[in-house]
Length: 348
Image (tube, rainbow, N blue to C red; front, side, top):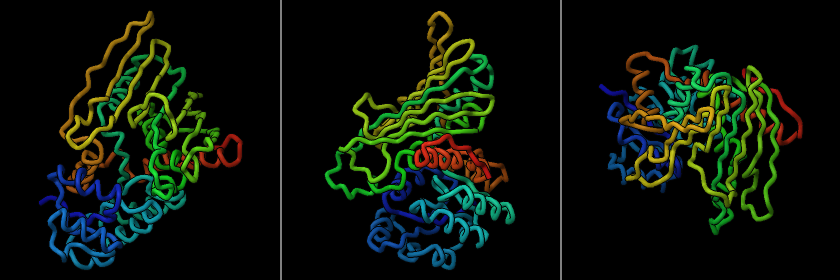
């Protein structure tokens, strides 16, 4: 039988999980949904066609009311670690949205608890589950462009038109570094196989920004083996928008690798229409790389990996322990933006 899950957090992005990410995954069964907001919970229950007894206001209530193997947490970020710890204490495996804790120290406590109990703790770093970064990772591992000389990453989107300045995204803590750049920093670790060592970050937003905290940043990252990465990201860019995974240029001794991934579009759009990988050889020869298609992408692919880990004991790529490096890199960038100094990346 497929593992049964309790889905916690149905507002906003969590509601999108319920409508678009979970239904395609046939290897899980939703046992219950949880949200403290009565209106949100009622609307989600009606849309999903669930019995009233399977829609609960708290994880505590759900754990007592239904049989379940795991908990999927898509509630606000400040609740991730407490909810994960409650689920683990009840003997349930956990899949949690990023960032999976408010600090690397808090995250480390959750990781240690999962290890103590022998339970799966997986972080949803959904940008990994697309063909372009997978191909880039493979090509770099194979030495397709030789020794790496440098990497530049650009993320450009315009998200400043909502007429209500109280819009939730405008009030997110560190909306660029914590909410978006963590995807790019996590991909950086994936495709290179290296860890960040030191970071210098500068944030500066124009007066027209509706964001309470930084919506744009320029970050210099020193990785292991002295690899230097230049990252530029903005929610306030009038430039040509990049796909959500950004536009990457990876320079090497024997050429250059360019890639981008995770385009936009609605539910009917091809999820990999904008995934591209190009190898540019000395002399300017550009060679497009054929990408493998998958049955599922993004969050749905991650949920399928989670279900397989529960069923077979395999270890997911994005365990809580494996994700600590991404969280530590985001923290170091945030500290650097505040201090104006180069900051060390401290992985617990």
